[in-house]
Image 1 (cartoon, rainbow, N blue to C red):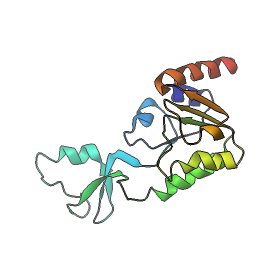
Image 2: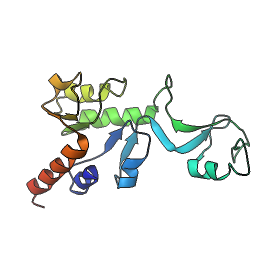
Image 3: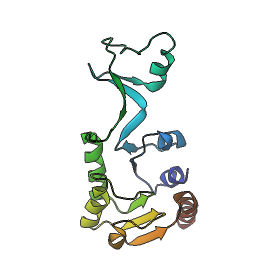
Image 4: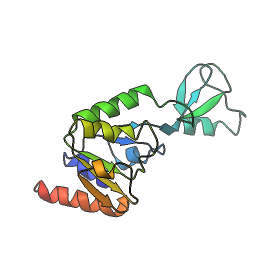
Length: 170
């Protein structure tokens, strides 16, 4: 919710997330780049058709295994990145472009241990973008960040959102 408040105040352009739960969208974030996909949709591995996970689950009582509504194939999986799979190329490209062009990068709640996602703040740093890093534990790029706050994002972000609102005259 704090990120949504910052976006509404004009302080946040996009959310780039490794989360697959869709909660950023549920909270109201408008531009969400999901690096590891989303568990809210399912893709047919035969034809590539994508449909809502809820629609597929609703068919389970009558159809087991559920079949693709397009090709009737039975090989379907959530549109999340499984171990060993590549991240969606378009999402990665958008995230890297945002990193290079940002006025400020806010990194929240990531160990920055999983690549290529961990590369995104490094791209920003190389482009001279200031980085604010909020994480409960130290990360491998704490020394590259301009501001490091070791704390829980659920406690730190609301305070940052409040201060951003005050600073912008709201």
